[in-house]
Amino acid sequence: MTAERVNPPALSPPAGFSHAVVATGSRLVFLAGQTALDADGEVVGDTLPDQFARALANLLTALHAAGGVPADLARVTVYATDVAAYRAHARELGRVWRELAGRDYPAMAVVGVVRLWDERALVELDGFALLP
Image 1 (cartoon, rainbow, N blue to C red):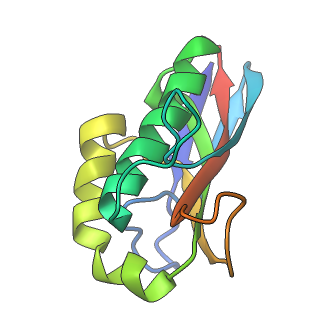
Image 2: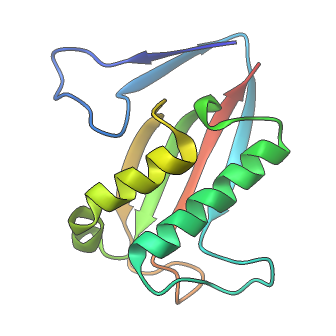
Image 3: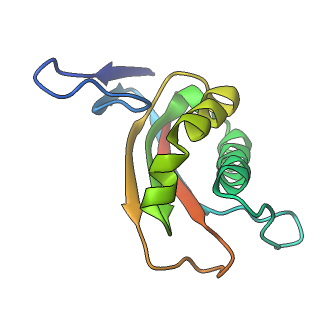
């Protein structure tokens, strides 16, 4: 399996994401939305960065269980209840991403939402990965 990150010079330089990911010879894994739920089904963390770290860890746990690694992520969508807060914490969230998932960035989007399934949840991540 190969995953080629494509970042055309005609587009704004990406920071923390890739504009496109081209995959060949792979299996597709769909990853359900993950919030900052612990093993007991309770939202943990009071801040956006804390919840982001837990939600990303949960997403990566599902990915690992399916046989993948962070570099296999092709697409991640982040749903945030407060996009302004997400932007304000962007540097810290980027650091969390790099610590947990590395620097092979998938194609990404951040979408503002009114609320998530769990009322205490501030952020949710879903996506898909391409495995060999």
